[in-house]
Length: 146
Image (cartoon, helix red, strand yellow):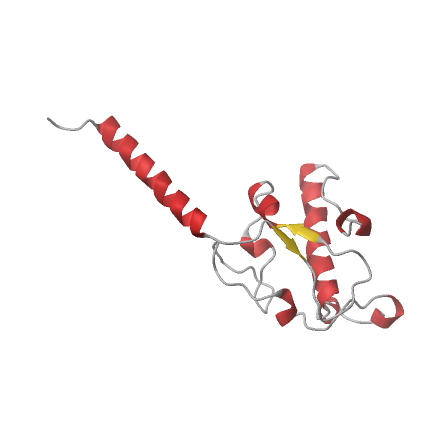
């Protein structure tokens, strides 16, 4: 007796789902990542970045945050090793006000906090504009919660 196409299709789908589940389950990443860089003293409370929420709920891809030296999105998959931001954005803290006057944006992003603020605020502003909302926070105290 020959198995039906429906049975073969169903078994194939179940096996594919099981395989995908095993791959995803093997991926290790923290649900919440404290953005605490110990190389400098933070002036505001540490941001608790909700990695899982950004990926699952907001459909952010790895390359939306992680990029190469030229600023181009990295093609990553869950479980890949990723360098910490401070490896490239290695100047501690943030430069702003009169200290930053006349500096190019790229030079400011050498500072760790400037790089994170630019990336996060930019993405949040784009999200709000695209979705005609104000859900994504763009002010200091919305991310740096006490």
